[in-house]
Amino acid sequence: MRTRSALPVAFLAVATLALGACTTASQEAGGSGTGGSAAASQGFDVSGIAKDGSIAAMVPAAIAEDGKLTVAAELSYAPLEFVGADLKTPVGLDVDIAGAVARLMGLEADIQSSQFDAIIPGIGTRYEVGISAFTITPERLQTVNMVSYFNAGSQFAVLKGNPDGIDPANLCGLTIGVQTGTVQQDELEAKKADCTDKPLEVLPYGKQADVTTNLVGGKLQAMYADSPVVAYAVEQTGGAIETLGDIRDAAPYGVVVAKDDTALARAVQAALQKLMDDGTLQQIAAAWGNEQGALTTAELNPQVG
Image (spheres, rainbow, N blue to C red):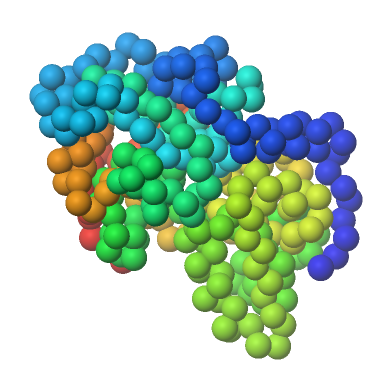
């Protein structure tokens, strides 16, 4: 691993503050996570979405009586889910979608911060749904229900100018950062077997923000993440990093629901389909610069490769 120029001091200060906030983010600002002033300036205002009686009737009684839809998200994966300018309000494309789904159900979205790899084990006990850029995979479908809503792929990023001359087709000998529990980590771990002469070092981090910071700071030679996340990171670092290669292996994201809670899964599916049919989902995606990823059909447990 080579040493590179340090991250600019001003950016490091902001990144460190934001990373600290991610560990304690809560719904202290109230509402669905989209009602606070920070969210209103960064995303789509879901306050105008009215309850849909037919969808609300599908919601299990215990959830309807509580009045809240408890949603788990890992809040360092901008622009999908992260902490707003007030350093406490959850914002992002997925957060707005959660708020919209909840409002159609006649509920309030209660966004709960969690480590990414702890969300699925907590679904059905601690959390009612997970909306956190979960790629739908056959392995995940064995343990949970998933409802598709957005399409994304994977992409690499490197320092501006690609100083190491990295070729995404030849990753051996590199040090690459990923977020723990992601499909990108799985892919790179499998790739290690092909790197016998020059080992591939994969460094996992609990938060995507840490991956980005360590790439710009010189600890990593590349990072590998979901394509919307990489594009946003390039923008937010002021061009200190750049994308490398094409978007790979595009696949749908899914809202996660407990395997034994088909009723709630069907309610989520109906809510997402309504958001797709009336154009709201596309508007939410457009507010975060990712309108091309919005799907037009919400499938429950779609077949994926």
